[in-house]
Length: 402
Image (tube, rainbow, N blue to C red; front, side, top):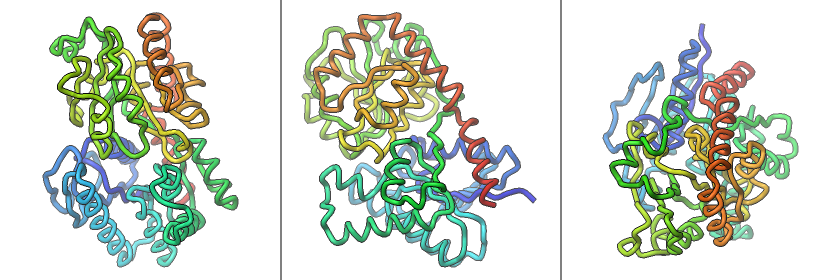
C-alpha cells in the first residue's frame, strides 16, 4: 500500500503563481514515487479564474476543489472573502473526515494552519506545519497592528499553540528557524529546514541577445533590471520605484506581476512619462522563462526588520535562470545568507537607494563579474534548489510521520 501525502493549500494548479507552481511541481514528483497525493485547494484566483470541477486528476495528483469564492486577488475585500470561504470549507471537511492520514498545511491563509492544527489535535491526526509567511509577528514588525492589542496577543498565543501541536515544523529559511526557536524553545527538535525550490524544466538559462522577448521589445541595447513576482506586504517597493525615477543611464526596468502594493510602486514615478520601465501582469508558464531571461540582473526585496518573517521564493527562479541578483533585504535574512554564501549577487540595505543604484551600475559595468555571479547562482540551484531535491526531502519527512 502506498503512502499518502495530503496537502491543504489555497493556491494550486491551474493557478500559475509561485506557491501554486512550487507545490504543484512538488506533488507531481511525489506522485511519481508511488505516493498517493491528494490536495485540497480553493478555486483559482490569480492567473486563472475558471471554476474547476470538484475533482481533477493532474499528473497523478488528486485535486479536490473545495467550495470557495475566486474573486480577483487585487481586490483586498475579494482576497479576504476568498481566504475566508476556503478556510471554512477546509475546516469543515477536515472536521467531518474519518481518515487518519497526516495533514500538511501552509501558513497561507494566515489563520489556516492554526485552525487545522487544532482540528487535527481534536481528531488525533498528525499535523505538519509548513511555515511560509509568519503571522501576526510580521504585521507587528510592519507596524500594521500593535503587539499590545488583545486580539493580536490571542493570535500569537494560538500560533504558538499550533506550533506545539505540530508533529513536524518545516521552515524555508534559517532566519525563520531561529525565530521559531525563540518563541517556542520546546519545538526546536521538531523543526526541519527545507528551502524552497524551482522547476528546472520551467526556468533555465537563455542567452539575452537571442531571446525572442528581448528582440521583439527592442531591449538589446539596454541593461535590463527585472523584478518578477508578487508585489506584496513583505516587499520593499519604494526603493525600487525611486530607482526607476532616477533614470539611470541606459538602464531599463521590467516589473512582472502584481499585488496589493503595486499602486505604491507606481506612486513613485509617472508611468506615462518614464521611458525606462515596462509593467507586465503575471505571466503563464509558457512565456515565463523567456521573460525571466530578458534581463541582466534581477531584484529581490524584503522590508527592513522582516528577517525570519518571509523568504521571497523568486530567488530560486533567478538562480535557475542563471542571472545575478541584487537583494534589497535585511543583512540577517535567509536571502542575504544565500547570496553571500553562493556569491551570486549583491546584498543592499532595503532602504538604501544610493546602494541600489551603485549595485546596478557596478554590475552593468562589470560583465565578467556579472556573468560569474549568474553561473554561481545556476550551480547552486542545480546542487541545492531543484524541485527534485526538495521532493526527496519532503519524502524523507513523509516517511518519518507515517
